[in-house]
Length: 352
Image (tube, rainbow, N blue to C red; front, side):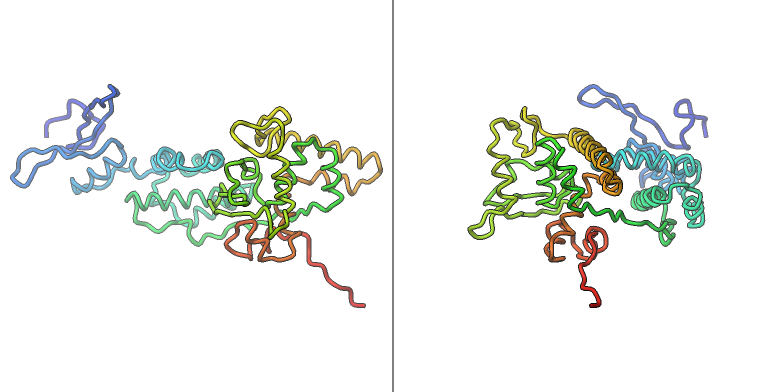
């Protein structure tokens, strides 16, 4: 066969063609220099992705897939390019953090060479057990996508590998802690705490609540994490709920955001995650200092452990019915509500 004059790093009979889009931008289209059923020369499109093109070339040429197309570095790159952008911004940041630990270990390994023992060794070598679980979960999804892409037919090596034990957060914000932080908080923080408590939703969903979500005397919530849709009543019969009264007060503010968010500053600026975090941390620090000055060290310690996200489990803990709590939080299983979010402990009678 005559040596290639272009694309010398490509497999035999693979050609790289430059093409121009309607907007003027150029791209590379890979072709297979083959023959039709009559023996005439025919170029077959292999696509624009080099690794995918090499795998398709291998099928047409009846040759083994080039090693570089089955290396984890190439698979990670494709996952980051094709899958990661479809995830929420916060999930993208979390995944990229996981990749900073996964890639130095697995980048140079062929996908077929990774076995469950290698995954277990990675788990045991990580100094952060909970982070290791998140990284292995992401690696498992990468393997599943590789199977869908036809890169490998091997079983996912993460399957069946034991995860590190995780202890769910069990902090419960009791009334004295709540009152201490609430009393010092600025008005918009108090409103955010009330809205989070009365709806039982995640902080991001609370900050996103807006006038457009109020219809038919209900607050409509589409949870950002699960996409679960809830309709929280603002009145029960002829009685206005505390949530209904709070929404009425927020809607009656003299200055409100043009975009309609319920939570805003006195100047009408919608609260952002950073704004609510800064206000909460300031109130928490001031409340803890005040408790220490009153020689209430235990209260000060519990105040410092209080986080805004603890308001959701506080709401779940203080609803008497487990079924009602589970529905408000949008859980598909009451077991999740009971094990993770009901933190107050069951009230029982003494022996005598």
